[in-house]
Image (cartoon, rainbow, N blue to C red; front, side, top):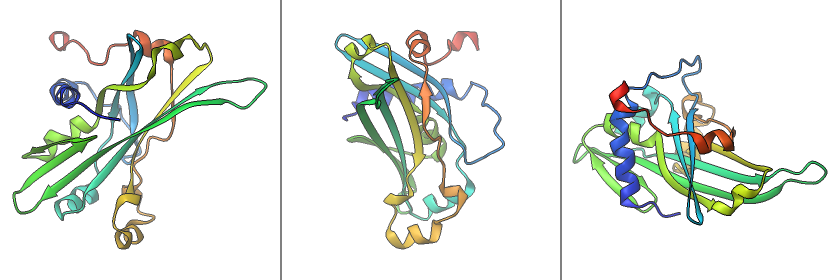
Length: 201
């Protein structure tokens, strides 16, 4: 999946607005929550936009500043549900977001798809990782399937770390950020708009 510079800029532009939206309280600080999902058919394409919420533990922030890159993986699974037979798989997509820090330049780099951009602070990057805008996930004709089910998941992927480091962080809950699979209400997502009107905040 190719992410365009326009989509990356859209996520960056949405970040200041999203910062004004109250966060849902959570007892589990390592939990990733899906705040909103928007489906938008455009011609023959179906686009999905997602808004996540999570807090980055200090352990991960410290690791990042020591030069360890963090990989966030967003996944989408599409199925046609069947009552008397196995569900039909319609697609499984994956998008990787990478955050890294250069001790030499004291700058952070955010990469998504084939694009990357540098930032001065981590606070500028985190809101962008929480918002995925305009991800083409399928053909819009899939919406004709009344049994269509769409699930989304976002997680921190520690399997992309160097092998010795995987052993060290294994079992550490701070490295287990995961939303698990969440079923998206297709009809509600088709009616939703991703961000609130800033003039009403």
